[in-house]
Structure formats: structure tokens, C-alpha cells
Length: 230
Picture 1 (cartoon, rainbow, N blue to C red):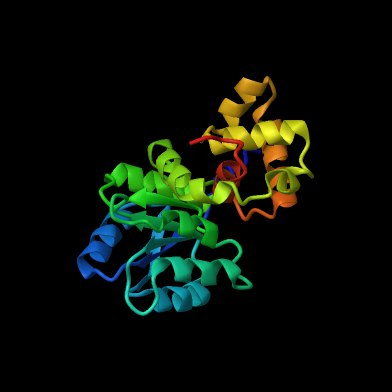
Picture 2 (picture 1 turned 135 degrees about the vertical axis):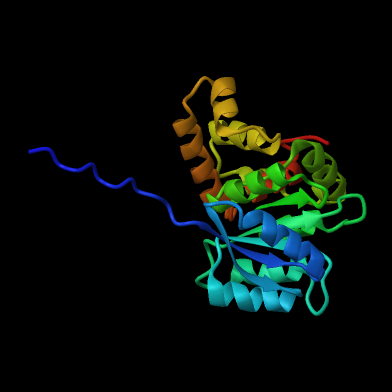
């Protein structure tokens, strides 16, 4: 007897919390995101304090977080979300105007998984949300190198680089340096002649040894410790 095919397994939609004090910006993002079958907007926050409260209440996959907001800015809101028990799987994607926001590095240290320019196109925004939702970092090389190099140059001399990296194997240091340069697992694997799965394992071990929340913080550490130059 012929049996019916099993229904395809579909993943639940990515839950997004919008945090921006400009209503028109939030409305525009909502209209764009709700056209996508795999993304749903679960709440909107008009300031950082609301973003923290709504993140706790709705447990989104991604918080699209503006930096400049009243009551509590996006950096401090990100830090509170990153430190809150039960929100370990909530990923924050920072919105920045880049040339005027000197806080992106602070946001990465606070626990953000990446950042996006406010003038990004729809396709870039959707891609960013999907990348961050699965736990990867979104760090555009053209922004990352300049920003992180700028804000870590003054810190590098004070960092005890060898002490911080002492627990890493030589291969883990190589992988960390490549992560710092913005390479994907596939690109790192090709450079080191190993499989992407092996790279993924090295990245995971390195994050654990360095106490990094995610790949974005590995990039910061790579610059801070001088593994990647400005």
C-alpha cells in the first residue's frame, strides 16, 4: 500500500524585536520583515529600557537595536540583555550610522552579535537578521577593520596578550587570527587545508577558552591582542 509522504519539517519563524525611538523607522522595518515567511516581529520598543523588558517577555531570536535612544541607550540595553539569565540565545544586531556613532566597539564588548548600517538595503537587512539568528556574527569587513582598529589601538599596549592567549593551541591562534580578519569557516578551512567542520570545532574551543560569547567577541579579542593588525 502506498503511504502519503510525510509533511516537510519547517523551522519556526525568526522572532524579531524592533528597538528604535523613531516610529517611522520601526514601521518601515516591520513592513519589510512581515513580508517574509521565515521572520515575524514580536514586539516594538521605543527606548532601551523597553527593549530589555520586552526581550525578557518575548524572548526573541534577534533584537534589532538602535544605539541612540532615550532612557537607556542601545549599548547599555545590549549589556543587560547579554547578562540576563534565560536570554542566552537572544542575539542583538546593532544599528549604526557609522560615521557618527563611536560606540560600536563598546556594543560588541557589551555582547552584540554584530552591527548594520542604517542605510543598508532590504536584502542586506534580511540577510543580517538570518545570519545573527543562527548564532553567527555579522561583521562587515569594510566597517570592522576601521572601527575595531581605531578603538583598540590605545588599549593594545595595556593588554596582557600572551597571558590571554596562553591557553590556546597554535592552530587555535591561527583560527582566531583568521576570524579576526572576517573570514568565514569555509575560507578559513581553505587557508588551513582543513574542513569547515574542523574550523567550527576550533572556533568553539577558542570561544570557550577565552570566555567569548560569540564570534563577534573573538574579532574584538583578535584585534586587542595584536593577532590582527590595524
